[in-house]
Image (cartoon, rainbow, N blue to C red; front, side, top):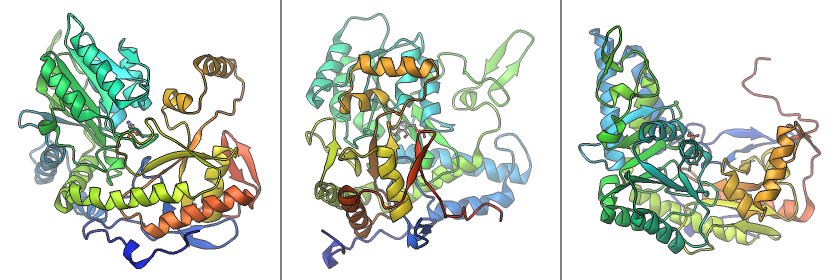
Length: 460
Ligand SMILES: Cc1ncc(COP(=O)(O)O)c(C=O)c1O
């Protein structure tokens, strides 16, 4: 069993990527305190120190963006627009692309789905996160089953683009599976789409952006969405980036101040995008945080990040392979590259119990459940569609149902080899002996009973 990293395993994160709370002490149910290991980066990421500094510097000058002649309004507007440019450079957008600030990837997908409803036919796959599935399903997209191989996915997209249709086609695809970490063949898909002449590609980059260079224009991605909180800027902003024409085809879904040039008794003359898509006072703090994180990542270089994360990903794979009784789930069993996200179950132990024991007894944070990708997790666990329909019927009739699922670990900036060693030790112990504490189930979660850990932020 690996307990300590060898000297050549020491991995150094570049300056400029320091994180708030990197050495946070986490209380265990035993009464001890340990340095927390955050292996839940696919869910959300800590804040970069430079992002916090930028937010702190902004706050005294915080004013109304784009709407005032005051000095504070001008400073705020300037920073807001600079952040827009930083996001554009980070994603590698074309000069003509529009960057719209939104809350997150979910909002970006819903916004684009609203704007292309009736404008384009849409194709996507069941393997998607609900954010990149349900908005498309609502507007009548063709939802294809999860392909057995990446080549099959490419063939299916080729067939969809070759099919005669009255409207252009939009293919909506994630860059990286949020469940398994596998990369989707975006470049092959982009090539097919570019060759078709009447199709466009939307990439949900929520999981791709924190790990790989996006190079949107160079790769032929037409639209792209990302979330700041998965990109080390957890202040509630994300972005939808892409070609202007489809963003201005329909009236925006959110109507309000800042989006219109003129309102008459019977008419609204909307501004151009992005303004028409950012009605209401925008989340300037979030946007500036996101822009700052993009700048920080560009300064270090996504290639550097990718290289460091590749070492950690290989180590994560190796550590998990060394845990007895661990079943790992993948889409395509090593046929594609993957980032440092891994999904598994441990023997027949409940995924929620494993996650609770990792947190409460070892100070290791992971995610468990179905990861908002129910159709994919259903398939990975070998549950058939009619079984899952039966569960849905029971839920509709008010039954409490213990949903199947898995455990997910995910790495990111600041993850270290010793973190992965601790994960392996903890999982191995859990596999051999099970949890050492007692847990009860409350609302689908396993909670320690008793739980002696005080909430450090609640008032005494
Ligand atoms: C691939 C993918 N798409 C979309 C989302 C939704 O992101 P958000 O919750 O930031 O809207 C997630 C979140 O986990 C994701 O992993």
